[in-house]
Image (tube, rainbow, N blue to C red):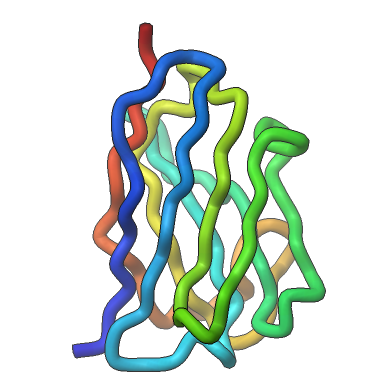
Length: 125
């Protein structure tokens, strides 16, 4: 079964950190750009960050620049999102998505071939 599986979400206090993982099953991430998206309650899904297949292109939406870091380990078939200095407004379900090779700024260039099921991140005191 071809799928992406996110993990690493949870409850954290403001100012805290979490590291999300996006692991591929049934296919290799080597040829794919991977993007992270999030959707907060009552809001539309928004792009957060993207890394190209060769890792040379990294980009972030303005609201997370300087706080989030995207990285990939193709040997582990996994992409990560390190989230530091978390704020309550970062609370959302976070999804990863795969598209062939390229990012368009901080979003994988369409078409997106695979989506994960999401992992909940809650930032609250």
